[in-house]
Length: 620
Image 1 (tube, rainbow, N blue to C red):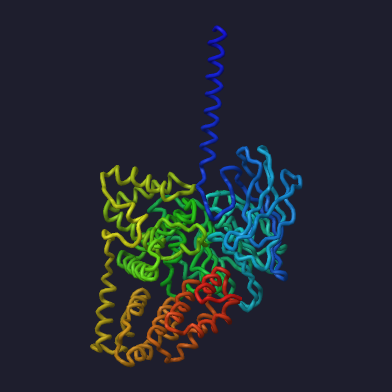
Image 2 (cartoon, helix red, strand yellow):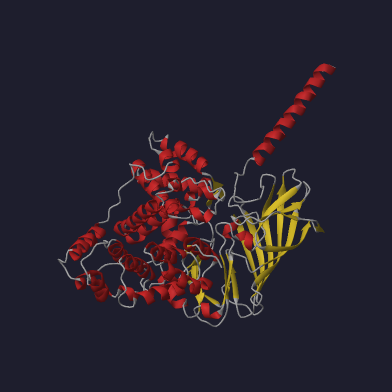
């Protein structure tokens, strides 16, 4: 080979190596989407594993310790974490202390935590403690628990609150494994979204492992005087001693739910499915933390009538935990799929008519939400634009119920067998990864619609406001029966006592109450309450919808105003209390709402507080 040919060959080889390396780096550098709700820059440097070593101090009401990360750098000079309301004491990179920088504080995002690294840096260790402003943590005194003997701690990370108790790259697309060492008072037990103890130990020191990569918002901790009771070898419940038997009985169908879910969309990937029932201040119905779902005590109705919530959180084990929305603008990918999956589980266990009743209620919720958002039609799109907003603003019925309606309409169009095959493969192919709306649309078009030569208005459903005209109509024969009774009662063809004697399940009762018309014969609303005693309902869902209707109808009989106040004082579930505060405000009872809220506010989690503060226009 002459010198010119040799030189040309070497240049070509160098170019090939350089171009190949560049392509690899570009591929790696572009693997994460732009997330406006995180300061982290995972395309430059990303955390892969977390070792958490913390002490829970109930006297000071803080968590303190270290968060040590195994990291991967792509020629970066710094790694960026999210932190909010945290005191950062020291930072070490590969065992050597380094100077760190905290950015300016943003009311929603908190601060960036910038740490200098080299390209070959392997570990970053952050010594920190929480403060009294930490939003994810709620320390409860004994009186706020069921047994009223010991304090309790719970965390709530979704959407961007994990950064308030752990300095972390708090974007859902940054999946990482974690291990933890947690020190708590000896009389209490710690449990996490990881492999958990089944009994309290004598040292108060607990160790945890989560070997599957999860999103930061799914790292969860609960500490209390808890006991465990098995339902099956892979399912069981945690609760305080006074509640454990009720909880165990209420959730007795959990193993059946897991089996039904697996029959639909493949193997359960998280080994264990346990549920812990928390004190009433927990702000959500449930939170799908892997291996350990958090649940509100408001679902303990005594008749298993509200356990669709457990089916919903179980469904998240596929849609949300296994395949996760990449950013909060894609939140519908978590919740719309989960509602669809939940309905399929409930149909498999309790029949099509039961599932249709749940779906009909979902459709009513969606209509109400669209009416509430009539001045903000852009908020009724599935793909959201939440830049500059708290991602909690997008956690409403649009993501859940419009997302479900889209998938239900798609199922009707393509056929259930095709839909099931598509979803099963979707979960399998994208397991332990994150998904953007755009990536999903591309996958849907190529793997379902084009393959079956089907034309479907995907873009209208996802990127346009409102409900497309081809939305499937959901019918329930049981609800038709209720509608007939409602009409007869409204026009006094039957008496209120006959309404109360109907052999209805909870969903039928809910449907009846929610559809009581605004205009009624004088005294008819009170007659109904006298006959059915709804103002003293023990089922929290019935109580919530009845109280809303009582407020809408300016009804004050049967001590209902005191019952409403007691409910708001003792229930912290955001959906329930916000519905009632909203009704008070809408019906010119804002002063009363503020008076009650001032007393109830200390019992609520920060997630609920932020919502109600904004709704009522108050600050403390």
